Amino acid sequence: MHDPIPPATDRPAPGLSLPHVAGLIRAAVPPMHRGGRPIVAAVAGAAAAVKIATGRGAAAGVLATAATALFFRNPRRVRPPLTGVALAAADGTVATVSDVLPPAELDLPREPAPRVSVFLSVLDVHVQRVPVDGRVLDVAYRPGTFLSADLDKASEDNERNAVLFETGDGTRIGVVQIAGLLARRIVCDIAPGDEVAAGETFGLIRFGSRVDVYLPAGSRVVVAPGQRTIGGETVLAELPRSD
Image: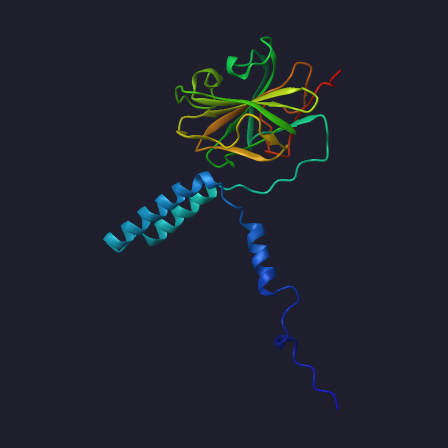
């Protein structure tokens, strides 16, 4: 005689094992950039101190810590299967698309070339990503002011960090991390000589900021002011063919 079939409520639901649930949580909660860990720890410590001293503020402390961790999120991105293109270096809104002289520290030809400027609000992901496969030629930091990053003059006057990339065929692209009104710290995790791949995370700007991408002359820009970009996924431009 066969054993009776247990009621459906007594059987574990398919796909609801502990490892599966843990995997779903990991997929839903993006990892945090390591540059934000000290800040999150400081906020959590301050919140704990307030709770110990006053017996209040637990909910506010948890909310502040969670919001800070969310700001430093570093979500996984999937690069498009395309060649001969430059990807967005940051999440945000395209502020300007124009032909301008690149900053001297990028060591690019001293002639007008396409620049795509992306403004990052405090709600955007603030990590920066490599726009092309290749290697790092140079990294140059410049001190400056802290004007609102949505102003065009912020590209020239604000504190910034310029990174020059070169592709395998010799095409050079510059990315400039620009501090904003609230930003006070630019983090860059790469150095000259590093081999990099498009879409990889290479830096972080803490709080409101801007990222400029300088493209070679002859590039066909495919984004417009007001458009939203996703770092490592949105195509900014089609690069000119190398002779």
